[in-house]
Image 1 (cartoon, rainbow, N blue to C red):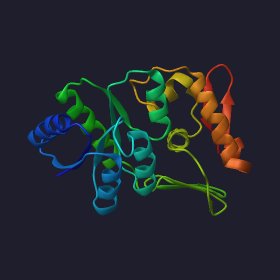
Image 2: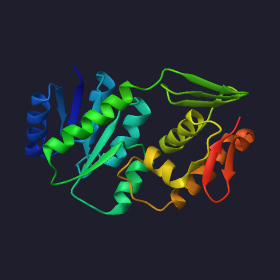
Image 3: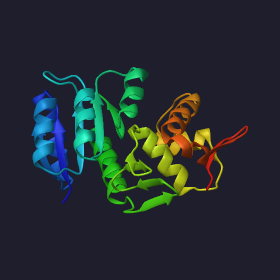
Length: 220
């Protein structure tokens, strides 16, 4: 049975999500703010965290950053705000999905199912190209034995490029699969992340090849 952590300072929201989660055979735990959520993450394993943004003591964005440092658990962010900046920032720090309040509990359950199955289906595989090593399940990238400081999205991008090694991928394709199907952003976002990823890969930057007029590919 999959276990969810519902984090929201509004009791009514937690009750609604809990009710539908139990109906969908999830085990449920709750937290009323980011600090409480982090303590629960340290003590228990969860298959998905549903995390509100606006909370006392520690907001959702700050909590997300700390949670991702503790465990690689999928996070769905809840927010009453619809600004694109919030969504972009959320994806930058590792949020797996973003749901705007008021939301349909049934749709939220469907989104939870997708991210939980995605994480459970991750390959326990390690790719190695000379001194560049990528642990897919652990989401750890090392360069000549030293852990690289990559953002969650840079890791997602690198893994997707490697899984499609020697295949030219368009910017829209990368947006669709790395930022998820419902991300509507400027394709230049991909260029920015590729630039930073190359910088962080150091002497192995040339593995990522620009395909003129299309996008990028990992060539090794």
